[in-house]
Amino acid sequence: MPAKTPASKAKASKPRTRSASKSADPTATAPVKPRKSGGGVSSGKRPAKRKPSTKSPSAASAKTKEAASTKPVLKRPSGLDLAAKVLGESDRPLSAKEIADRVIAAGWTTAGKTPHATLYSAMLREIKAKGPKSRFVKEERGRFGVSQ
Image (cartoon, rainbow, N blue to C red; front, top):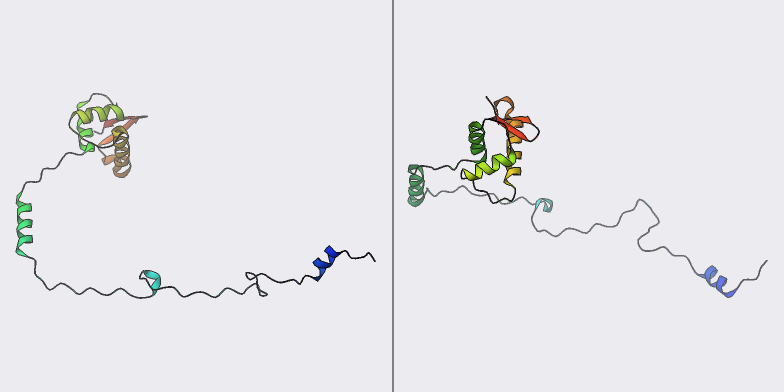
């Protein structure tokens, strides 16, 4: 039998212990801390019910509603409306870039840097959503015409 060296004695005499995270039972779970109540869905409490308002609408709010209904509403034409108008006046299918240039010249304003991409995607969405009832027809790749 070989003689034990002092280093091997230290290893052999050192008792084995389990770390705190490992337990003897692998299915055991750590105790769950109770949550602080702070509202939300997980707190288990229901929100307080609102009582219906017993106040009648004020005269000031009624006047503003009246004034708003008597004013004529000036609706700005959308980019799609102007695009349909531009395509109707054109004798050939146009690209989204050409349509955007003509629509901007007709008075459409946008804060975006790529109005042609905005119009392109809006026209495609209308074609997909409305199908044959759409104002636009995709004639060829990147070119749109007005439907008959």
